[in-house]
Length: 140
Length: 139
Image (cartoon, rainbow over all chains, first blue to last red):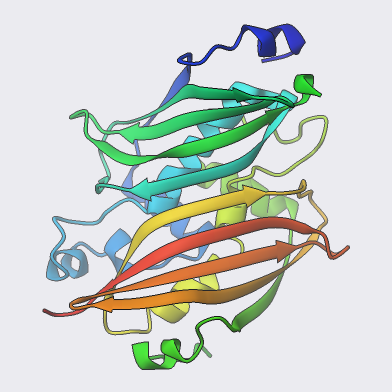
């Protein structure tokens, strides 16, 4: 993404470059530290199991941050995120291979691009789904 | 000292400002943030020197989640909505106002809608983050 011609070439249905992530338990600890989300289900296996979970789970907000990374990798310095709305449909676990996807859903006047976004695990399960709206500077 | 709450305490807070907090946006915070995400190519420091938008997911959230974790119920995350209205830059001072906008009980679950608004030092609204927390008690 770097200029007006890129904006003009974006079409509904286009897929933006996906982003693959491999969250580890260390990454969950790092995220807990920076986000302040010290919910034990994210670092204490026994606690998580006692609460009916299979084990420690990835923070939903970390998965959302992965989607934001995918989007910012795409628009770079030529735009910014205006809105992101996601639902957590399934659990992600340390060791999973998570792939973030984004598909252009609508082009809106003024350089706004609406996208469907999702996170899929290695089994193809959609664990996070939602929509994003990005403003591209070339659309002014 | 974190105040310990019960769900009944939260019911009385619906619609009212719950927490007001301030956060200086410092370079070390941003470095720790991008490291935590595992972002090897953050656009920071781009020509506009804006912090990653996902940072707004975390600003203020730590106090809210800490309060909810004081409840005996398990806390799960249902959804997140983030709106970005203006850039946030290193050196900004953000003031966050958190409120509970709705609370619904459907045993053994309780659904809590939270809204956090973030203003910068010029009183400009820079972000709004809505969260759905799901509390799961014993059936």
